[in-house]
Image 1 (tube, rainbow, N blue to C red):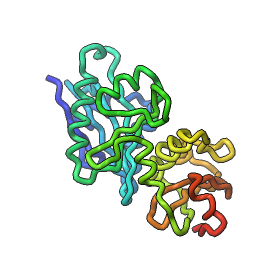
Image 2 (cartoon, helix red, strand yellow; image 1 turned 30 degrees about the horizontal axis):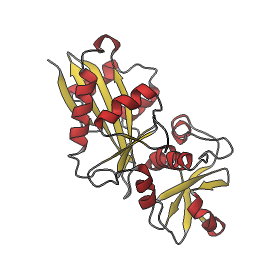
Image 3 (tube, rainbow, N blue to C red; image 1 turned 120 degrees about the vertical axis):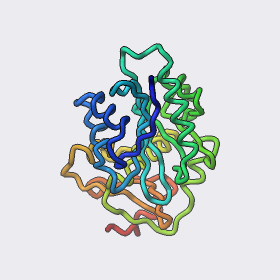
Image 4 (cartoon, one colour; image 1 turned 90 degrees about the vertical axis):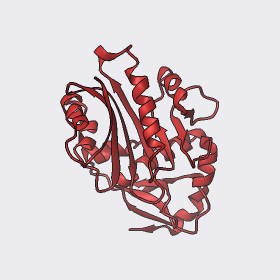
Length: 248
């Protein structure tokens, strides 16, 4: 019989954890990295898994940082090829959303980087909306209980006026704010979030880099941009504060 489980990374070797470890391909380095607890210092990692006889038939992953304005990265949805067409993914998605809505320390909203049309069509059934205006596919945003309904409203509430900026070392704590929120927000206004062609903070954190990478925070600890080897890019509203930014 198929069981649906919410597995919180770091809570022990449950049936769901064992099924995930046995089923996620070795080459899926990122999923194993998170599942093995390598980001626990900075983030809450949760896997929603449908498992049977020690195999993870379908899984969904979500992570959000432990700071006061958490942005959740959601996705990595995968169903075993031999299990497709049986409705297991839809059931896992429904289970996932139901469990997320129960979270006491809920993130500000869910963000999904997938841009495929068929994925967008499937996820919109579960409350996801396109983040970029005038598009029919992802990236995607899903409001939660206390979230603004649209991505634009979310940005209006997040990128509020600040008195000063500071740049601190980039860690997993701020990955979602850069690769998801900042990326989507800049894209939505026709700009690129990359710094001199450098993008994907997660790849640098996962694989290591010789670059000096920092994130840029406001006095309210909102992440509004990043810095690579001394070159900064921030959401346009904060460009006037860069000259006096404190670099830690």
